[in-house]
Amino acid sequence: MARQILTLNQISIKGLERLPRDSYEVASEFSHPDAILLRSHKLKAEDIADSVLAIGRAGAGVNNIPVAACTQRGIPVFNSPGANANAVKELVATGMLLGSRGVVEGIEYVRTLAHEQDEVALNKTLEANKKMFKGSELSGKTLGVVGLGAIGSLVAEMALTLGMDVIGYDPALSVEAAWRLSSQVRKADTLSALFARCDFISLHLPVLDSTRGLINAELLSAVRPGTCLLNFARQEIVDEAALVEALEHGHLRSYIADFPSPALIKRDDVILMPHIGASTEEAEDNCAIMAADQLRDFLENGNIRNSVNFPTLQLERVSGCRLSVTNENVPRILGSVLSILADENINVIDMLNKSRDQVAYNLIDIESRPADAVLDQMRALNGVTNVRLIGNCV
Image (cartoon, rainbow, N blue to C red):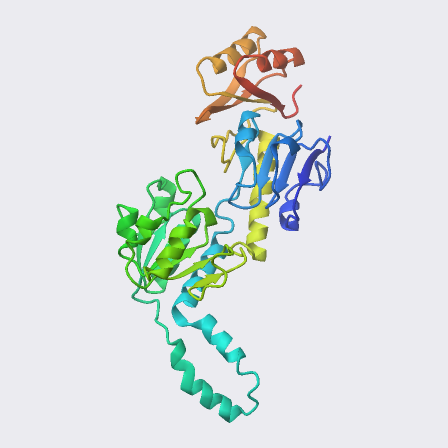
């Protein structure tokens, strides 16, 4: 039977092509789908059918998905980190150039001269007034990058190629991210130290309890005069009231962001874009491909890559019969599962167990198919969230 994938947004055809038609049905309406694939659709917990095994987000952020409710039900939520990184990096570069060269103001000024039909007179006017839009070059300036993940590391590398000095701050920097990062990126020990030393500051953080409103009045008071703050991450990271105060008092020269708001939209010292950081054909293709591949690998093999609520776990298939078991991260549950298999004389060929916070996830390759009653016995164990039989078991 073909697996059913419910799409809640328009998904790139290049991503959908990763789901073979002979084994997958993809549509915007299913009553009992096996998985959900979406982009920005606001998904409610009550809208997730009991049949759903996984949710894939063709993008990095998952604030439109009820992750906690999914975790409680044993549903892994996948995202696509890094798939849109180049698109965001290029828009950050655009933002820095717009914030340093008077480009926006210059374009708006030229439009006011539409009435001038004499080319000689027009050129004379432009030559006389172009000094109003005099800017500065990025080369030699200092960029502070807050968050050095997939996007932040690319932004840092881009700035280095433009001749900028780069300072980075990321207390949660992974080993993988550290390997990607150029040795020319200087490390700041604290956020306040970074804010005090930079001409441009670019934010690349997720929205968490620890990052919501992180850029506050205290930090903004530490910036050097003339600093430009760029936010192509999430609106909630910046305390808007503190931002406005910093702009009013000249602590910040300008704010450039991808998140318009009524309080900022008419300010001359703010440049706002309509949330287009990942709006390129290439980024949409890359995100859809990554999300579809991850969903398929999970549905067909139980493997987990880039989940925001489950541990990363990949086990090479050595048998046609595989169990996936999700349970609370407490002692003895895995032992009880293995005991049930042993009582049925079912041999374990290979297995892998990992945990993340309160969730434990197990892949167990076995020699023969357990009876449905055996699977029900496992599901009845206290602390077991779900049990799934994967593959063509005989």
